[in-house]
Image 1: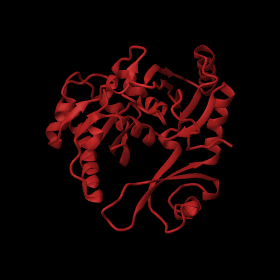
Image 2: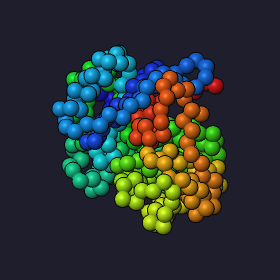
Image 3: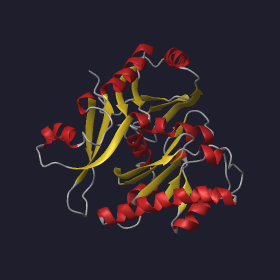
Length: 316
């Protein structure tokens, strides 16, 4: 059966598919022996029904000739649990099974129906090492696999949002000394903290529908400041946890993904409240663009771009 959270490919071209209730976000990355990887295409395709979603997926395979390209799919954040759990003292080969029973009271479905994967957290200052545990329903994984295989994709991996965003953060220049990547997506968002390519902490942010709808203005208003202050609190909590849990110095900076709609002064406001450098993500520093992509498409598709970067080495 599909190796659901691990990739079989190494440094080969990848197409990522992120189907949601609202749209399909897709991106294709092709590696190079030297230089930045190439972003071949990146699209955000709204959908209104499951039937339309299936037709769009099949159309993508045919139109872009994707049937033999390694495919990675992203699960929506509501389709799995990402838990930080104290690691049991068992041999590595017994870890997943031990974790299964450790997390059984932390999920809302029978643990016998769960697919589980684990990944390490770096050395921690406090006693009792913690690990991340990914838990999803077997039937949800199987449904996603069937949908993509039926459409003609060469599905090799099903990934999660947090690890996709880690792939992006790890390529940022600030990652060398620690960076927090902040994404305010339309229906979901996140804070991803990495250093030297290692995921230290991730935090979910609520979608920014209110910010881009009823509160929207081309420049910051008092009402916007109130909404952004909730983001400031979450970023500060993340930075504080990173420094206290791991005994690390402050990160080099915060990088904000371009917003779906432009709002003048957001990065400056966050910087003034946090007392730390805040800048915008420049995707062209990370990948070579084969097509022009505007900021709203970057904001909507960044998790798909991150998923497509899985296992791709950057040789500059």
